[in-house]
Image (cartoon, rainbow, N blue to C red; front, top):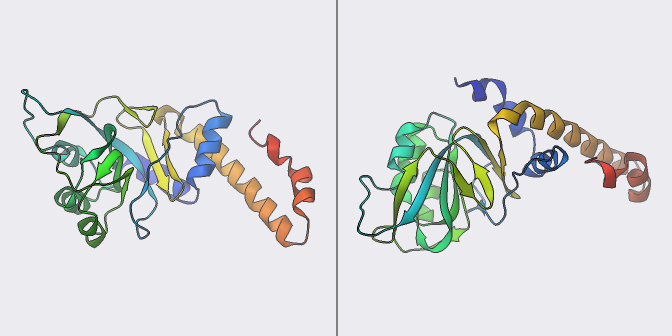
Length: 221
């Protein structure tokens, strides 16, 4: 079992992406993305160290492998494949064959700054895909893999191999690998405060009373 799976996975899985995003803000870290969502309601929470894929336009220089294949080969069980396609929605960069290969490898899921296709195949494979949308157009002849496991930009956030991607129905956040423990401690603190606020309202206190008691506006200070 990897160090992440052993030490951190269960702690992340108790949280939401918004807990983690708030913790990042409180610590002055940039990690909250936008516009990337699970592609179907059955797709679950996703968390793990990333294997990155950087894409570029197809042209006279040819790629040696179909995009994503090297990332699947490099990934360990529980990892997340993270694809930087610059937010493009006119061409797919993930599909059913890749989803099945990744599922069999034990990969947690894929997060894509761009579009995917073969959604039905991904659902059937029970493989988690987070992206900006779906499209039918193939990647072949349109885009190619430039590099695997390099630093990329993902929805405005710097991401390096081994950083942590966390996603749920609210969206995706990136946690720098050097800050995992610090972010988790803060996120857990915020989670507990929010749970206490909800419990207080359910016990009969008004929202205004709870806001004044817990200083909700200043929770990230």
